[in-house]
Length: 160
Image (cartoon, rainbow, N blue to C red; front, side, top):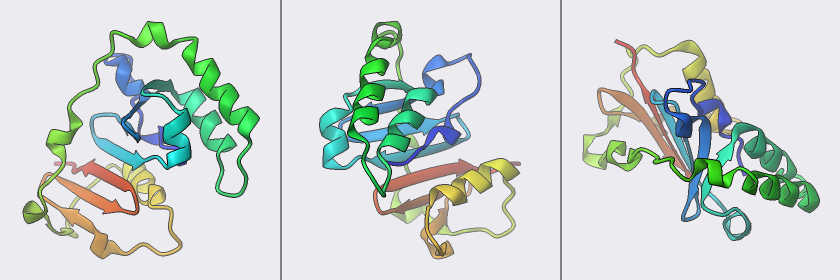
């Protein structure tokens, strides 16, 4: 389970973007300029219910569900503590981000003259979580770059 909270919005204008959104076995985080969607494994899908998770709760769950060792007590505690605030988030409506997902025919190799916010591109590359990064997997549609591999999809808007 990945910690995807670096992609969350820090603004309070659209509160739901300050939360990780979980639905149908996927977790999504976006701030409007970048987006990450991860596929949760069966164990996480079984225990993490659809809804909104605060940054703090997602970080706690991610740490408890590390690749090296699952701390079931900490993981389940973080999930249970998130339920306390579920009623406050019932009015949230997550944006239909899937309309941004590009069609494969619209994607080209990355344009090396593209410009990005420095911290955003660092987060983007860090999220790939690999010893080596295969740049051929990062595609370009003119407005943003796109990465899809091993249960993760990411978008990063370009700067003008």
